[in-house]
Amino acid sequence: MCNMSKKSIKVKSTLCKRVWNATFGKFVCLTFAIWFFVALLSLLWTPYSLLETNGFKVWQKPSFSHWLGTDGTGSDMLSWLMAGSRIELILVFSTVLVAACVGFIVLSFMISSSQIVRTISIMSVDALISIPTVLIALMLAVPFGASVVVIVIACGTGYGLNLARIVRPSAQLALQSDYVISAVLQGSSRKYVLIHHVLPNIIPVAFVELSLSAGTVILAESGLTYLGIGVPAGVPSWGRVLATSVSLIHVNPLSVVWPGLIVTVVVVALNLFGDVLRKVLDPSSKSTNKVGEK
Image (cartoon, rainbow, N blue to C red):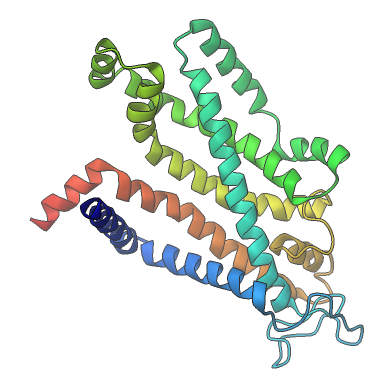
């Protein structure tokens, strides 16, 4: 047990080093570290209370008392952006989890051994994937109202269907490989083949797609919140701050810069994270690195 735990720690340490040393790896790691730190810090402290408003200090420019200025209610913009970081973190993790579950469940039908099931599932995915995420959110907002749950379900479902469609070719290639055919001839069950042979081959592609989905959900949250069907009023989020600032951009143009800059940096980091993981987990890249080291 002790040797296994040491081996596991060594593998994790090696993986972390490969991620750090990869192209753009340092940028991704530092961005995530700052994001997580600020999200945790906002649970304990923000410069000002989110409920604190001041009608005499609306749309103030950055100063020593308000580092990023104030919004239309006189609230401190830095405090709202700090508190919004944890909402975005919850939103990203929840959406990626839903998308992964939906994607792999749908994929199991798309690569089913039954021709009828495969055909119906592929046609259904092609039809459902054409429905815009905004339309799904609008339909969910009617019974549930504007909430984070609406964003998670709408984006998670849409991204999950897209994930299944993208990883399906890789899954089919794995099913047609010699080692899978050999495993089936030796009596391996369909479940065993999917978990031990198909899943490891589609993980690099899935990670890239899920990282893109994670970045897209932040943009989707901003858009849906601006339309009034995303994060409800009073709940801090980057999209809420951005929507408020954009609506009165003619009053204080600088107020749009801070939430826009944060969203841009985090989205870029999430998009690059998938590429970094793909290079780290791809066996061919590992062998190339070993040859280079020699």
